[in-house]
Image 1 (cartoon, helix red, strand yellow):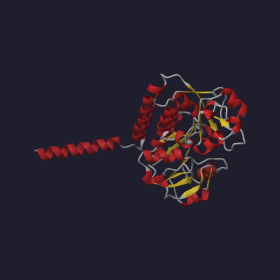
Image 2: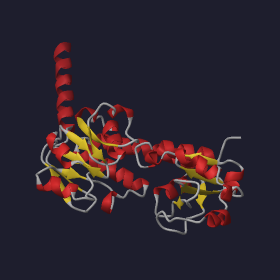
Image 3: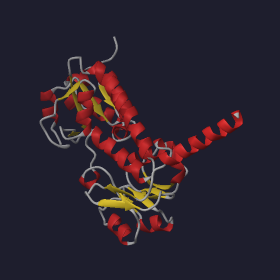
Image 4: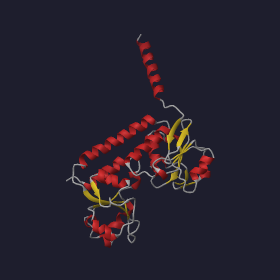
Length: 294
């Protein structure tokens, strides 16, 4: 009797798993607002775009279906041995075709790559806003959801979004009760050329606010080039930049009187982590720099 009961429970369990399996075809909306229908669960996936796509696939447990990625210094170590299909901003159409993918993620259309692939019958999916722009955390969540649905991991995508959101809420619960610290996120490719500042329509701005900062360039849009005099005038107490560019700010004699430079509160944050499933980790690091524990 007990044996029969165990068998029955196993059968019910397996039936339940089958009921949870995502059904295909599925239809998702890409960055252009175009509906993309995926007939069957993809088995050969190529990432031809930024590392965000690769991070999502890894966290959704779909690494074994990834056959190639675009070249990028931001690629995670898990894909070190995979073939490359060119740079993320200029993927090689011929190389992609030779690998016979059933789904290509993130192919740009700067030189018509996406159009060529679609004309040849390849299913291509790019996420974000028009042009693949991803300026907010909700856009990251939407990207995870769309890709999860596309690869047959819709429920896993929901769990991943929930985990990231929970981490963000925990961080904000401590930072948003503190006085905001004047901050800026600058990209300084050299010491001689004035840097570019992250304005209000950027994920850098959103993360500075969530981390307990106040963006001194919140009144500008996008990533305008700002003069050294303007940085000195706005005088941020903390500056974030690319790790490789910290020295360009700290050792710039024209910025020596800026509070963040004078106190050596110029911190490197990998920009790729801001646009990835690691966004909560980046937020925590930024919050610790803005509000160090005493």
